[in-house]
Length: 75
Image (cartoon, rainbow, N blue to C red; front, side, top):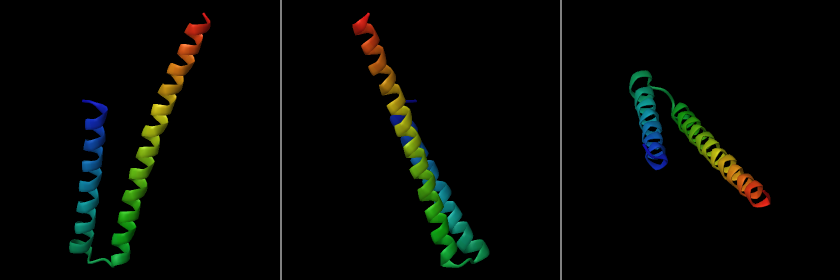
């Protein structure tokens, strides 16, 4: 599975969990709209954290390649 497919699967999975949580909260518990907004905010924060983590991994890998290139050029 490629990185792009993993990202798409992650977004779809997070969206499904969020929709199921919202529908479940509204239908079963008859909660206030404030709870729904809270669930949406939590879902957004989770997606933001996952994107930051993915970007950080890419920066680490890119930094490794830059350092390797400098070592090979100097050697």
